[in-house]
Image (cartoon, rainbow, N blue to C red; front, side, top):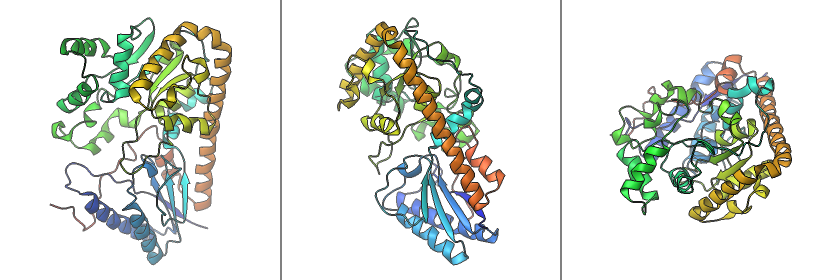
Length: 405
């Protein structure tokens, strides 16, 4: 019988190390060799190498194939028969061959979002859809056009108000964020800009508020990126009080971008999408066209037939897309009840489909555990948490390869 060990190979550099991309890859190869040796010494014959946070979206096409080859070769040297790679994000694309014996994918953002609301989902405690003519807009890091730019358009059109919305918006908290945010609204004079920021600033809890400085220009941060593991947001990034979904009937989803220069792959979605689906919300999507098409590919209803401009997601210019989103939202607020019966069926379809995908994940995890005799402790630690804190790991210090001085 095989005996498997889960090894998290998703090390990330911190600002207390002076890594270049090349030296960090060299160090990772050393750490992978060490992990293979440790696994062999502990009696394992299979390594399940995981990258659950960023998965295959982040690794470099130049260096990751080499890293995978180094891990495979070391495993063969020390008697480890199988090297399986499990990606938790961006599982449909990688530009170069990898040396793993098998590559698997399971959406980790779905995983921790489902874990967060599992009791409510399993016990049917999340509310059914009701046409309330009120939308939910949850912002995070503001320095994106689909955050501050969209929020300003909503404000301009007088629909960023309590009668029509529940929202969160975080004012820029340092000079780096301020510069980026200001660049998205160059034609707004300073007085109006500050008035907008003061009006729009709002939050529904303190989870992101207490962690936001980790998403910053590091020259102004007192601390290191890996310290975020001690923050409640890292432990519960999907958690928001379900009552704000109960009081609204449409989610305006401002999805995160593909941050990485290595890939134009947008076949991924995050907790912002999964959370709205589990709460039976229709949605307007403020994100990349590729992400919208990926939702369709997965079989989800995307609600464009209920909007004035149903092809809004195909507009290539993001400014034009935001204009169309605002017009669609204004029309939906007025006419939602007209489409309520069909929307109710569509959101229930999406809810059931998301639960189906979550259950298929459960089958994958249980099959891996059974096939490779994975311990309960490993499986619980990596797959039954409600966030990222268990996955953010510092570069290990036990390897002799040092970063450049």
